Length: 270
Length: 287
Image 1 (cartoon, rainbow over the protein chains, first blue to last red):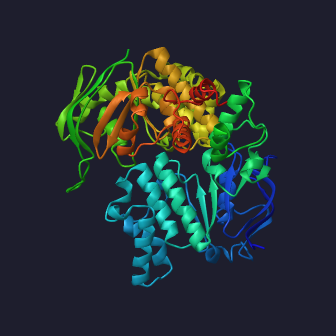
Image 2: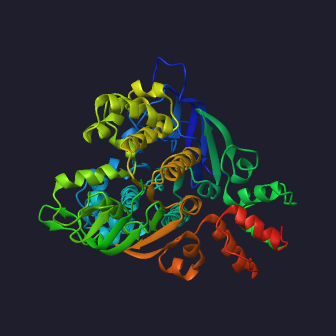
Image 3: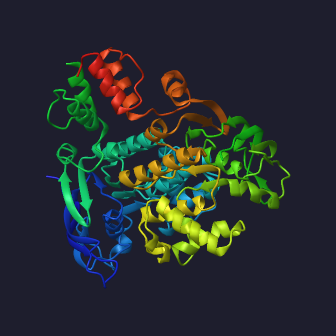
């Protein structure tokens, strides 16, 4: 029985107390250690608000967040932030260092880490995002996708238990995105790191263990991809499902449930 | 009125005080035809954004020259002369909403045209017109841009560029960070202006679906050079070339290649969209 690393109970949040509308209303879920959860939903559905709450950047009006068995509050947030790392959508918002390696080192220096260990961790993190060749470069002068890799390296160097990616891969080209996702999958299997990824890319969401779909501050659906993508959605489904529906519209006899891409290839070949 | 953009042996780098970066553009020769919709693709750091910046003088060439219609950008171009180029070439940056600054949407949109000598009243008229063009209503003009949602801010930022009535529109990932519906709306809007106004459009994107849906030509960049410039269909038909330049293919084509590899069955044509693919499967009797 896996233990939950994150437990969220009855979270309620409103940006403006004068308004009736809740940005998040009564959100509860739990995430197991080593799980990969994709959070999807339209712009304004509360995804980023939820992510910011998970790392203690926003404080809920009511409800409780527990990380690794400890409740997240003003007293524990500094310690818990060592265990949960977040990468934002626009990497320009989080650069501090004047070179790539300095930037990755920043958080580690804050932890008073010995120089040798810091160096090893920076090497590993930059290697993982394939940015070792750029270590002496000025991060503000890198391309959008390279910046995003550096931002991810900065968080990976901290070796967090939980990695929260708030659309952190949007500026990457699709191939780099797939490669980085594969490295993250690898990291998850070797170090049992938990990954929460907020994304609009349904192909990316389809490869998660579980999808949490938000709509206007509520959890609309939550479950494995085959359940979430099964029903009729206003969402663009993953590619194999789109193909299945396209064929269905042309009155072809296709299986009537969601298939992964491999299952689809297999079925076409039959 | 549309216009052609010509790069003649252009090399460029960035200068920071006494330090020069390595070349970000390396002997670029390219002719972007008037009225074309060109997608610029390539690995991160290949020089895509630099190519766009060079088109409106934000990045000056170190060697060579760029002509935009009858205007020329040369290494020694003084800043004043660039103004007429910037009026013609409207540039939408990555995350353009981070450049919103004024206290109302109207003031923000009017800023550009007024800088180029349009009167205040005229600018206000233009603002009314462009907010509708980006799919918003006029009552948004009195609001603060900072009170809007991400998708709305993006539209206002793009409206601010359209207000300058450019002949050439260059866009750096205009859909990034929007949800799939918001993204499609923005891309459809751009496609309709491109068509209605006969603009020359240059789009940097990572999304191969955007490339096959909207663009007619593709520029592939690698290490500051243009390695390929051709029609969309031709570029995606050549698998070896795509592999060589580390490029991705649209989902439909990727599915097709995966299918062909696993089954040994080769479909009759190169499928770039889901409709092509469905047609092909039906044609060979597999679906």
